[in-house]
Length: 157
Image (cartoon, rainbow, N blue to C red; front, top):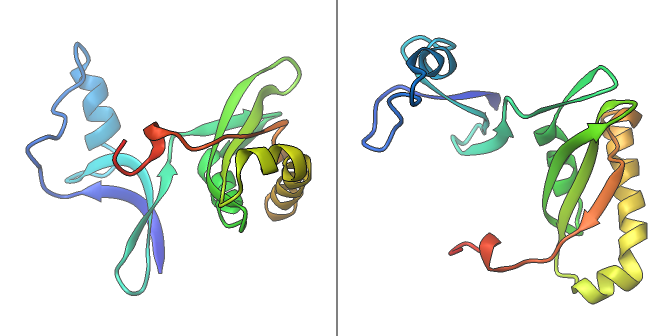
């Protein structure tokens, strides 16, 4: 098992070839970090069986009170919870900390009505505690939002 940056060794028909009016930035971002490879900007995990799992953007960092925290590591912890189908972590401007963090998640097999009535606050507190234990207290989100599935996050949408 190994993890690292996802890089591609050969060109493909749909790949980007430049950034409009900034070819130097394109070279510095995608071709210079790993010479001879195209750097996608994504992290990846490869199992001993040879399967790949994308772990998130490597450049998606939130700076909370001087602590640099990758959103993917928080999402990974939350997504392992039995009641969570998907999650997303975003930063927002915070007057004291510089950036704050909000967690939004899609519940697994729980109706939105039941989530709102019975599980919302309990699960939010449970997820905040889980993040605090697995990473650190500063990593726990300031806000937790329950979302519901719609056509835009289905496999065909």
